[in-house]
Each structure stands twice: as C-alpha cells, then as structure tokens.
Image (cartoon, rainbow, N blue to C red):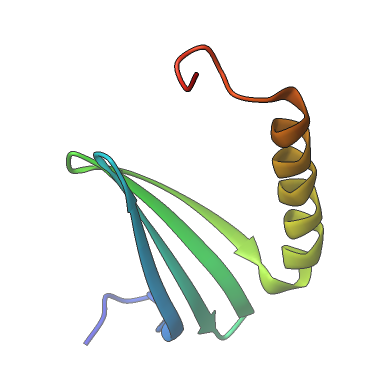
Length: 81
C-alpha cells in the first residue's frame, strides 16, 4: 500500500533508449488527474525527470521537430566531422 496522499500511476507504455552513458526512459502513465508522459534521464545513477501532460504532447513534438530540422540545416559539429 502507498503512503497517505500518494496516487497510483498506471503505466500505459514504457520505452527505453541508451546513448553512450545516458539512458532515457519514456513512460506514458495515467493517474486520477489524467495522462502524462514522464521522461527520465539516468546518467550514472543521477536522474532527472520531466512530466508532460498528454494534452501538450503535440506542441512538444512540434518544437522537438523544429530542433531536429534546425540541427540538420546547421550540419555536423566540429566533434562529429
């Protein structure tokens, strides 16, 4: 049983990707307040998390696409060439 005041979060989807030493966890969850995407970055045991309500995912995706497009226009960094 959870702690008093703690809400249950049901996972609807879990995915993980790894880049070098970093792992990213994508968890689509739901609680009594609604659905949300929880993105967690784990680097050597240190974790950082952001929460995005699903109502804002389309705007998040659009901004992410702008970043991807801008990166492809600018080209590789000195470290990548």
